[in-house]
Image (cartoon, rainbow, N blue to C red; front, side, top):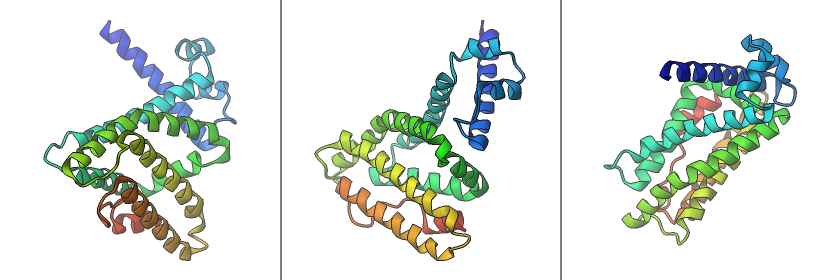
Length: 225
């Protein structure tokens, strides 16, 4: 039974991998099911054995991305020796460092995710991620309240708003990033926006001024080039 389950999961992931690649390169709306079938090399019946529709496949893809985000958050929560601010900054620093080390991948992902043809895919991924990850973020916020470094009467609602803020930062970053080659002066605007979001997060949490860092300045400058 375990061998059959493994084969099932492997095939399902092959379909998801192919779909993700095609969605990123062509756009969700411009990728018919037949293109995914051809790329994987399976029959139409096999595809529909795993997914009833392209929409269901997109839901599964969003779930997989969400699980990756949750795994990252859970690593932060598994460090009992860290205070809440350190956990939050470590989470942000880890994300920024990965992006800095994988700049070309980030460019490709950004071009795909923020393409107008992928509005539905982006919305599904963002909505699912915020809903699933907010309870984990709330644990960090509650810890900060207990430690006396955060001051908010709405820890659970604030946790969801933090992810919404980060989604907003991602939108602004994706809007400006493509302009940097022709307008390198816009780098200053990105840094200003980063500082603005850091300030907003501190105010939402009631955290000390200058305590929250969305990654290092060096990592950001490496990302924007």
